[in-house]
Image (spheres, rainbow, N blue to C red):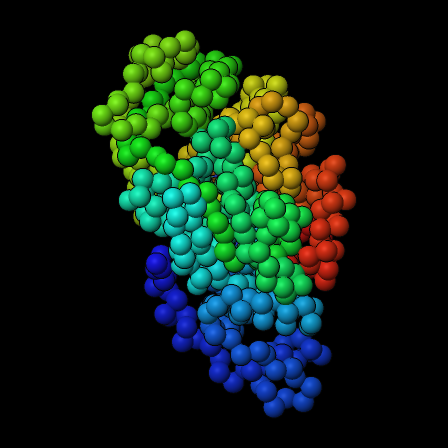
Amino acid sequence: MSSGALPRRSILQGALMAAVTAFNPVSRSWASGDEPGALSLPPFDGQLLLDTAARQQAADDFGHIVHRTPWAVLIPGSVEDIVKVVRFARRHRLKVAGTRGIGESHSTGGQAQVEAGVLIDMSALSTIHEITPTSAWVDAGVRWIHLLQATLPLGKSPPTLTDFIDLSIGGTLSVGGIGGQAFRHGLQVDNVLELEVVTGRGERVRCSPVHRKPLFDSVRSGLGQFGIIVRARIRLVAVPPRARTYTAAYSQLAGLVADQEKLIEDGRFDYVEGSISVSGGVRSYQLEAVKYFSPEAEPDNAVLLQGLSFQPGTLAVQDSSYFDFTNRLAPLVEFLKGLGVWQLPHPWLNVFVPGRSVTSYVEQVLDQTPEAEMGQGTILLYPFRNQALTAPFLRVPAGRHTFLLSLLRTAVPPTPDNVTALLAKNQLFLEQLADIGGKAYPISSGPKNPSEWCEHFQPLWGLFQASKEAFDPDHILTPGQRIF
Ligand SMILES: Cc1cc2nc3c(=O)[nH]c(=O)nc-3n(C[C@H](O)[C@H](O)[C@H](O)COP(=O)(O)OP(=O)(O)OC[C@H]3O[C@@H](n4cnc5c(N)ncnc54)[C@H](O)[C@@H]3O)c2cc1C
């Protein structure tokens, strides 16, 4: 089963410069095979794109702020191509990174980009190999939406889905992958049963909680530092076909937070999130809670809403199919793309806030965020229980509950000065976060040099470094994270 190729690939495939068959290690540039001293490139099943258009397209992501141009883009035709390119890069000290697709990375700070190296377009390998009653074995380039479309006819779904499901499986497993189901099931990295990885040594290996556990634990939320994930076995759970969404407003943040904490502890809903909107200087706090159900057993609204303290008259209840619920952002995304907003800079901030300090920290951030600075972007607040987490390199604050605060800004106006000012604001919020023991979710602004990463990974920085030496000793993988 294939999840389908991208149409732009056919345009790019014609762009390979046939004369280039070698790499000149002295000038560190591509060469023709007959150039003295040039090293022959291995033969690839896929394509190595060297043309300017492909390389420029690869120097972008959803943030549209950082632009790093690779020397080449590999469209792998097989996993062996990834092994070959990693080994070639290791031999010649080239940098390599995997990405969801050329210019399609959903990172916002250049994390998936690679200056003067090789970018691997993982979307070229997007086959769903097997679906069993309990798991799916898939290529890392498969997107969650395509996996879901394949599993739902069997009544199955990955337990946790990101709000936006058009993300790659390799991409979210490299960071975490959080959604409103995380309080029960953990993040997506907590629901992967086995991985196949091409390490920075150029070895193709499988790992799981019982086989090569150190590699398995390194790669999950490992920010692409230890290996390129090529395949994953994703846990599946049974899901009813319908979803009932309840939204309701609170006048105070503390009220929303108290109800969110109550709901993630008693587990009466299947999904719990929240959002904050600011209009005309007035803040509104919204709960979003969802119950999955079968048509023959509808949820009892009164029982589900008992004891919650939202403002009377603000409740809205909406039924949809499970798929439409999980894919609820698709119409908005299409609308934003149509308006051109998708192409504007996104100086996003995503931070894990300790439950004990969430109200004061979020209010502090809101007090320093004038409405205009959001560029009509969204503010989200996801609660989850630390108990559900299993990936060591997903760093969250200590405590029982953690909240992901997402400040999903669009820079309006999209000028360099405005972007710089908003990134400076992010830095301020990160410093204030450090004061309360919080951690960045490193998909947007976050640590940006080795000493900040050392701080981020403490007390596991030593383990992180040791894993790097074990699995990517020449430090060729994923330089865009700026960790090493
Ligand atoms: C509109 C939008 C909505 C989002 N919603 C959510 C959400 O609800 N929850 C959430 O948790 N996150 C969310 N994110 C963030 C998202 O999870 C991250 O951007 C994540 O990195 C996935 O993006 P990607 O598939 O585009 O991967 P990329 O951005 O291409 O890659 C992300 C990182 O992983 C590395 N990488 C990619 N593929 C591989 C691989 N196969 N092997 C090893 N390393 C790899 C890259 O080098 C990079 O360092 C959202 C982002 C956007 C733009």
